Length: 489
Image (tube, rainbow, N blue to C red; front, top):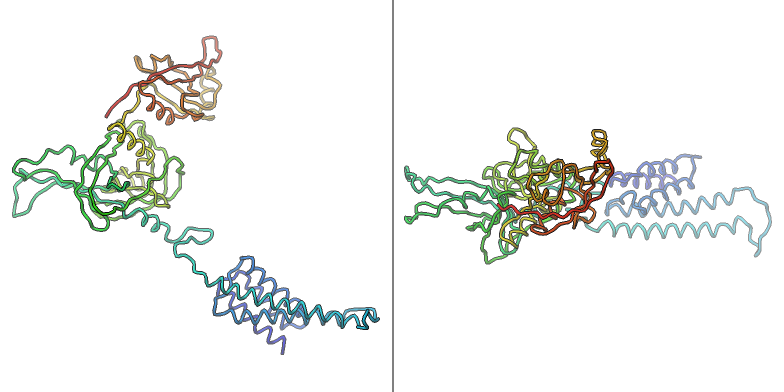
């Protein structure tokens, strides 16, 4: 009867474990089998299996059963503790022994009962305390937005979008007809639309220049008031404001729009794009085809797609983020955000003849433009007059095979061509030179870093260190000083 009751209770414990997703359900079933199987390990095996299940729950390898099932598990724990005591007593009574009294006149087998009962009682108490503690732990609520172990939350896209969406705006440029007849009582007007996002408490909005170009180039309304241009900014919460273009940069296709509001405005945080990796999840927000509050998602396909690869001569020197997130007409100017809801790019354009090939301006580029617009009112770009090729070990190995006189270098910037009369030629730079260092580079010899530092040294001497092969074939390290000129948009 005792074994039958133990088996019934432990089979119930196994069912509870199965309902809660426990990984060691088979252990509970084996315990039940051991309790009812004659000669199959008996109470000692039963106690071992019970300990194994409790060990897995205690170490966090399997979840505990639901709160309503804990009385059954607690009773099964008591049975397992008593089983341990009974099994120990049975073994001590029937094992081979040498007869003889011990100190105090007690027989050895009888003396061994007391620790057996003590261990059984202690095991029962520990099991009871742990079951109550596990019940309290199971009552702790799990946050709804927490990601399950080993994977992303099923709402990870929604969570990222919800952090940025309140600050995303729809920008509409209305061009009143003026000279166009008002047929059938309908006011005819030209209308263009795009997106943007609020990034400062004072109502400053970042968007694309081409989104607001119509509001900049349009003529002021005539004296009769029938023509003119208006720029309207719509928020996600339904509020509409009239915006004003504060400044812009055509080369980077970025513009600043400001709205005035007495109440607090939602803003989105600007992140960093320098540490992006191919394959990262991103979310694009905006108003494609006048469809406000739209969200698309994808991954980063390339972190530094060159403007010249896209045939954009005017934007030469700008690298773009390529993504397969859908960016359509009207998405331009909206934010491209990471899973933390931080802006890592400004949606800009897509390839019309392909799906899943879209581009965004890196937020680090936007930050640099914003800084220069704030300090100088315009963006100054350096002009040195050289073509540059980034060198890495593989490129260097290939160049060495093509030209045995190529300098012994694995990193740097090759100068294949120097424009006549340029600042570089005046500074002594020659075709074939390899730039291995420059002022402010801090050991990072890349084309992007060189352009950045040249922008800070416009009109000033900047030191370059180049490797050069002499006529006799020897390699020399030469120090030069160049003064970059400025180009304005």
